[in-house]
Length: 77
Figure 1: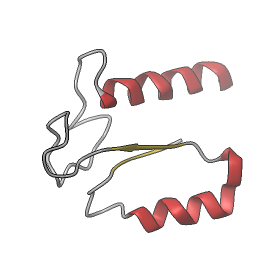
Figure 2: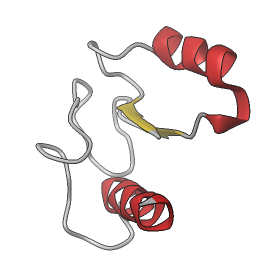
Figure 3: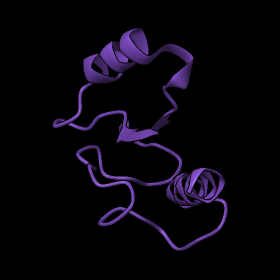
C-alpha cells in the first residue's frame, strides 16, 4: 500500500507509476486529492497522509486511508 496526496511535491505521480509498473496488481495505491480547492480542504503541499494531515473524521479521505492500512495489516499479520 502506498499513500500520497496528488500535489505532494515530495512524492510525485511518476513514483507511483513506477511502482505500478514494477509491482502490478500487488501495488495498492491511494491518491488523495490535494489540488487547489479540493473538496476536503487539504493543503496543496500536503505530504503526510497518516500523521500530519490525518483527520479523525469518518468519511474523510485520510480516515479512509488509515482504515485501509489497518485492514491490510489485520489481514496479513
